[in-house]
Length: 113
Length: 115
Image 1: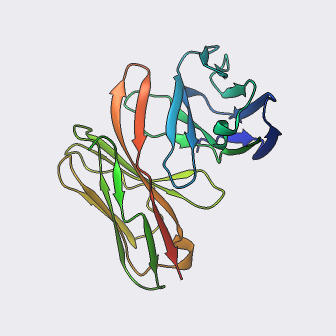
Image 2 (image 1 turned 90 degrees about the horizontal axis):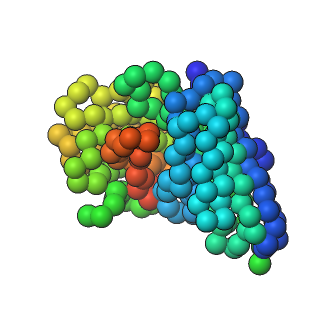
Image 3 (image 1 turned 30 degrees about the vertical axis):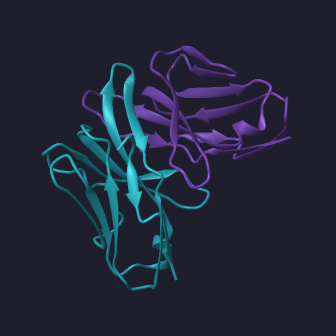
């Protein structure tokens, strides 16, 4: 069974601060996705990374996939209240024809104005 | 519609009753997933449909849970003889395959409360 551990579980910061959320596993993933979920809504895909060592930037968000494709991080620069939400990482398993994602438990981020 | 829709948005039921949850996927998406999200937990895979292939039911927690999908359209998740531990948000997602991993589009979920 593949598991993804996210840390921290909860994070409360002031507007303008930087933060990093981690997603770790002992398993190799073919891809790694990050989602943001707001209360009462389903998760919304932010980014997909598929290559070991890949770095993708989405405005103030920077996503990195580990070289061994076992871990990932999400860094937010100058956090804003609109960044508040539950951040979920999800790994796509190795192997052809695979279709299931393994989700972490999420990091609940609160950005205080 | 433009996105995945689910109904009802909220369902409160008494222990022992049956409930039926509905998912309308994005038109043209051949793959459909059901997940369960308990408070403070990640998404737990329940079942997967792909076109006319046999569904992958490996995530269903007990035989009280079942799901159906007709072709590439609506899906229903049924929970029989509900228990309090079934209380959770049930999320549906439909999928399109892309060159950079699969992209799942989620509905808003149905919040089920079993009293």
